[in-house]
Every structure is written in C-alpha cells, then in structure tokens.
Length: 334
Ligand SMILES: Nc1ncnc2c1ncn2[C@@H]1O[C@H](COP(=O)(O)OP(=O)(O)OP(=O)(O)O)[C@@H](O)[C@H]1O
Image (cartoon, rainbow, N blue to C red; front, side, top):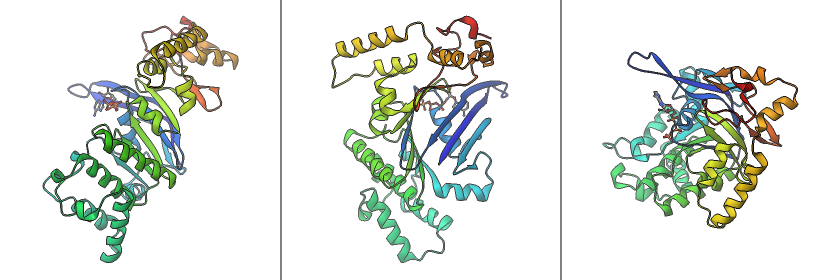
C-alpha cells in the first residue's frame, strides 16, 4: 500500500538557509494493509520528518513515496485532497490539533463541509455516532464541549474518529500515546489493534522500544536519519544485529528476565558478531568490492544501504556514526 523508496530530506538551516541538515537518508520501507509498522529511533533520528513527508506536510528532497502505486511526493491541490481521504495523521499533542476557542464539533463540521457536503444531516449524524462508537466515545460526553473540557485521551480518540469518518486506509500515528496516562494508553493501543484488524495500515512513530515491540508487526530502526535495521518485530527484537539496535535494546529493562540473563545473551551476541559487519560480508559475498560501497553521503557508506541477513530481516553497515570505523575495515572509507 505505502512504499518509501530511497526517501531523503535535507533541511536548509542557518540564518540565510546556508547550511544543510540531512535529516532523512535513503529510507526505504513499506506498510501493507492491516499491518502496524513502527519507526523507532531516538530523538532527532528523523521519525517525524518521515511521517510528515508521508502526510505531505513536508516536501522530500529525494526518493519516492508511492501509495497504491501512485507517486504522492508531488501532489496538486485536488490530488492532495483525495489522498487525505485515504491517509491521515494523528500527532503527539492532541491539544495542539484543536483550536481552543471552538467547540470540538467544529472539527467534524469542517470535515463535512470539505468532503461530505452532499450527505444529509441525518446520515452524517449516524456516521458520526458510528465513528465515535468505534473509538469508544459517547457523543453526549464529547459534542458541544471545548477542547479544555476533555482529556488528552478523549481528544486523541476524537482525532482517530475524525480519521475513521474518512474511511482511511493508512494512519500515521506519531508518538500518539506519549502524552497519555497509563490506562488511557492501553485503550488507545487496543483501539489501534482493532483498527488494524479491520484492515487499516498504521505507520507508528515512537522512540519507545517496548511500545514498538507491543504494537508492531514489523519494525524499522532509524539512526541519524538512516535505517540501520528492519524486519519482523520478533526477528529484530529477539536477534538484534546492528550495534545501534543492540544498544537500544540493552537499555530497556525486561520484566520477564533478570539482568544477568539479558547480559549473558548480549555477551553471546557480541562474541558472535565481534569484528564483523554483516552488511559488508554480504556485499563481499555478492562479489562487489568494498571500494564500490565507498560512495558516501557525509562519510556514511551508501551503496546497497541494507542487506537481507535472514528472510525479511535487513541490516545496514555496522558503523554507528560517520566518525566511527566499520569493523569490516577502513577500506569502506571514501
Ligand atoms: N523544520 C526544520 N528545520 C530544520 N531542521 C529540522 C526541522 N525539523 C526537524 N529538523 C531536524 O531534523 C532532524 C530530525 O528531526 P525529527 O523531528 O524528524 O526527529 P525525530 O526522530 O522525530 O525526533 P523527536 O522524537 O524528538 O520528535 C533533527 O536534527 C531536527 O533538529
């Protein structure tokens, strides 16, 4: 359904836009119907930038985004309107998505005017009630209220209901539960599970590994704007290959295992992978010279970007930063 291919974003920064910040580098991934794909990475790794490009809130500087085969990187006004019928986003701070001086009903009225002008009032009300029921909200508790009279969880669910009214196919959920309390979090997560069951594809943006593990079918680990590893959730979480993924996972407390068990597992993995870079081993096995891989952006090797280490489990160069040597050796340096 959604495919990102070699997606790039360079921000112009500095007083007169004289510097470049390469926020997203050659990111490729896809999201299928009825599937949750999590974009996981620390702050500044480019997750939100990718989400915004998918939602057409930001232009990309390279690569393509296709939705059901159509390139959506350069949509005109009309085409964009059609795209938003199928693809919507919900963001971290639900309060900032509502205008505080208007009742929340206005969000739905605007939607009706833009997309459903011909639908009768009775039919519209019935659709609205259905959408609210899907996110377990009672119309009487919500409609006629101002945003400050509702909780963050209620507002977040309202935004999801708004998306549902459009009968969307893909939801970009950007840190949508990080501002919610624990009990509301689980409600919203369960709701996402239900929506997925109905065939919705979800691009779930999070810095929280445990959440990513809980909700996703597949995960994409981002480091400094680049995908370092991606694959099925259990493949990546049970056998993390890239040093960055391993560091991330090692920092998460495990309720089901002792630290000693976790450390023993990590030591075994370190022994297995010591001095190796699966990416370059694979490249060499394919008969390509490491020199060919030296084509680089800011010192980070490009070339294939990722290799498939096991079916569906991809990994990038083991170098974690431009300054760091790849364990495969200095030959990869430009
Ligand atoms: N409008 C902008 N202009 C210039 N640089 C930007 C802009 N937006 C983001 N950046 C930079 O791009 C990089 C990626 O930012 P982005 O917000 O996509 O990361 P993130 O992984 O979503 O982080 P967080 O979890 O903190 O939101 C960061 O270095 C950020 O400072």
